[in-house]
Length: 250
Image 1 (cartoon, helix red, strand yellow):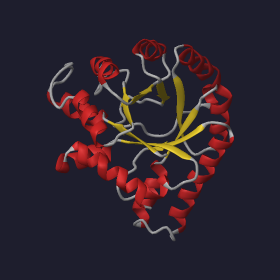
Image 2 (cartoon, one colour; image 1 turned 45 degrees about the horizontal axis):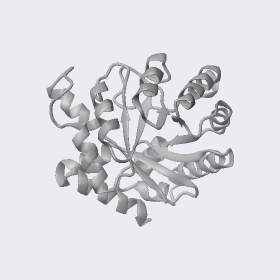
Image 3 (tube, helix red, strand yellow; image 1 turned 30 degrees about the horizontal axis):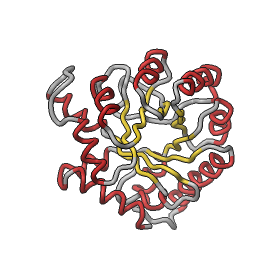
Image 4 (cartoon, rainbow, N blue to C red; image 1 turned 90 degrees about the vertical axis):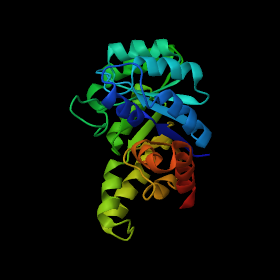
């Protein structure tokens, strides 16, 4: 069964816009996780950044105590974040690149270029019962590097596909879009062939998610901005329900 991970970072972003550098205020990501769960979310995804610009340590602590679905902790591969993850009680962490100026994660992790470091990080997480996933571009050399480092899953970056979808107006007969989707399919097959779970995410929305959801072997989709944006109009519970429907529609 294809699972949906709902990223609630943008709920925390709205909170911090009003309550800058505070650990409380509204909207509360912990309550957002509850609403997402009631809407059908299978996983709650949060990115605890090194600068704590949106999700805060308090959020992670409360979510691990109250959330009734799996938490996917997105994190940089730093010593501090490894310590936080190992002490948090989460069972899954997705390692991502992190830039101070970016609004959201842009581009995949260079697993191949830092394989020695990432091998140690994956092993340290595994010692605490945490499965590590790598957020990577649809690149066969990165997939092989992820396998060699011991990652149990790869989340393939769907941003290039989403951009191609927008330029093509969703017309799959356009070569650019069909090529982008084909690249995801090839990457997904390689991930599965390497014995890892195939996850996908980034810039997926209600219009473009169907074709990614239909890719052979895909296990999880991680989506945030589109769901939180629609929740402004219909509520988070209903926005999650609608995304689940969109995932099953194609």
